[in-house]
Every structure is written in structure tokens, then in C-alpha cells.
Image 1 (cartoon, rainbow, N blue to C red):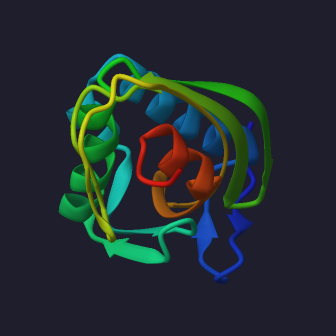
Image 2: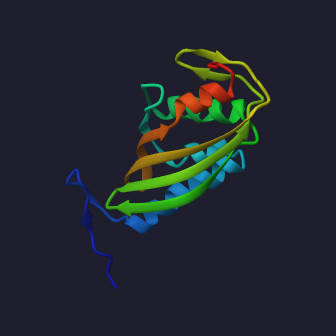
Image 3: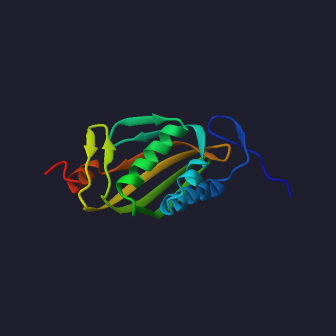
Length: 156
């Protein structure tokens, strides 16, 4: 049986389906939870773009993504994400996750470094991923930055 070739929003033919795209994101979360950063990085494109809405930052490239992802895991080594809801349409995957971790390392932010507090952080996060050629190519991540800054003692 032949697999139907679909066209992405950019007009480029692709063979992935919304279900396979969702699975790629689930693999990323599993790699993050187990601390396998190299496995996580292998799932993104060389030109991946990450927009962190709470910080107003855009990071580009695989090395920048590795730094971005490692920053969170270094600041909260026990951090895990739990997928609460996931939906996909074409080459886009939308995820509601719950991230929980203890602030045991320095978190680098655009406004300065947040030194370890030992405080536990629980954040509801929404991530919107674009998939291109079987890899994650663009992330827009939304979370309550004020809650994070309060939990980590940067704001009273």
C-alpha cells in the first residue's frame, strides 16, 4: 500500500503524518526526562529556532538549542516534563506539559543568572513545535515567567 505524499504549509512535499510528528515530540520529552541531551538534540534541525515568550528571546541553531535545553536541566537536574495534552495538524504539534524540578543549579536568563534556591518549581507550559523532514524545526514556548522568577527568589 502506498503512503500518500502530503504537502506542508510551506508547499514542500513531506511523508510525515501528524501522528509521527507527535511521536517525535514525545521522544524529545523522554530524552529530556532521562537526561539524554544528545538524543534530544538529534531530534532537531540544524537551523532550529526557539522563541521563549516569557523572556522575549529567540535562539537559532542546534548548538543554541543544546545550550537552551541544557540550561534548564542544569538549573533543575531533577526536572521532568509530563505531557498533559497533545494535538497535531499537518507539520505542527501543540503540547501542554507540566514541568517540575528543584532549583539546584544556576539558571541563566536574559536578565541575569538565578542562583540555586532549592525551591521546587511546577510550571504549566505550552509548546508549539513545527516539524520539517522528520525533525523539530521551530519551537514557541509559553510559560508563567513571573511565577518562575518568584519561585526562584528573583521577585518578591
